[in-house]
Image (tube, rainbow, N blue to C red):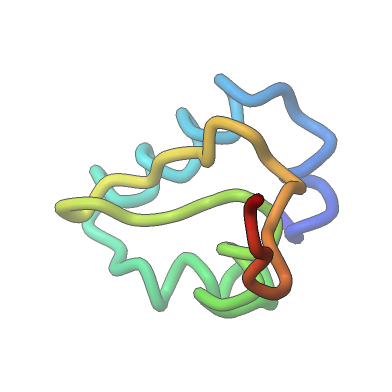
Length: 71
């Protein structure tokens, strides 16, 4: 599977696939290599790893690019 194919799945299926790969004994770096990507790119599309489990950002696709002043 490629990262593009993974992103075509719904959110639950994406996490199920990624964590299933971890359950089979693959490391995060091996999974990224299988998807032809890296951790940084995974973070850009909304995935992060906590205690060796993949999770999704609550609001995928939104990121602050620079600090803003309030008030």
